Image 1 (cartoon, rainbow, N blue to C red):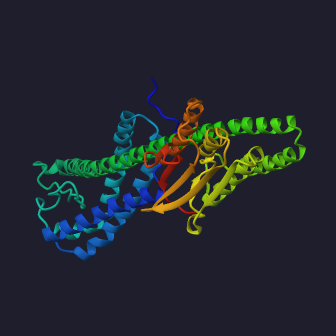
Image 2 (cartoon, one colour):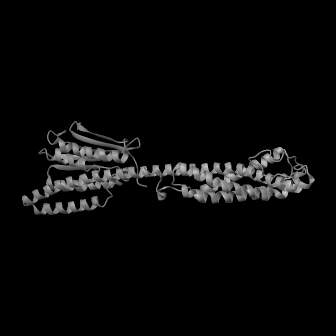
Length: 398
């Protein structure tokens, strides 16, 4: 099992975020060091601002260089990141310690006259000044004073470097921890975006599948109707039906199978379909469309009404020998869109229930794929016929 990720799939922390984090780190350092110096009342607070600013600027630069190295480990396992932070922070801390010694060396002589050794370096975290390096009492024999003094100076210098490096080392480790935390946040967000993309892709595939189930069924019915007209020697009506079928498919196939359409467009499409069926049932099929003007731009899944209208034609119009009226209407109720497909046929079909249920299931599945559980599809017999009612969230174009 591999613990590494593809570097191209790991999101990098934005440069702006990195810069803000580095600036925040060193601004905090500057403020705390200045506050500490003032509280301890060492004096020369104004004179200390310039060298402290120089150390801060160098610290920002060193931290940005550290970031350039750390970003190479963004895709690595957490333990590799930890090792990288521990190792890379060491030279950064030493460089900062040496910078601190160099920048503040000019203030040493002035402060040596005013501060005791105990006051200097009393706090290892934000100590800024190097030690005095004096070793007056380091050798009892005057002949060895020069050698012992040099050794004492070197030891004091190394001790001071170590103290400063140790303080800055933990400062660098703290920023490394912050940086890798930001990397982890980016990885979590990337995973969430991918999951959402996968969900959207799955939903789109489901919508396409359900939408494409409608067209073959409708094509089968229309071809049967066209065949019946040809066999009964009705060429004029067959030609009219072919033209209407052509218009229907030109409009339906132009739509994105996963997209929404205006309710007015959906009504027009069902009007075309019923025009086709009127060729089959010129004396028995009546149509009523009721679409309020303010709902014309309401958005619905394309061809969502097709199975419901087909059911009315198949189980109401073709099942009786009298005129049947199919009504398609829409209204708004409490910020929800209510669409009704009803007929005054015989009600619940007594035969062919399998096909009837498939059409309703297709509509329900498409609505749930599009809107989740925030939908209602109710179908059943009513006095004087059959009614199917859809309730979905009301959204308008634009």
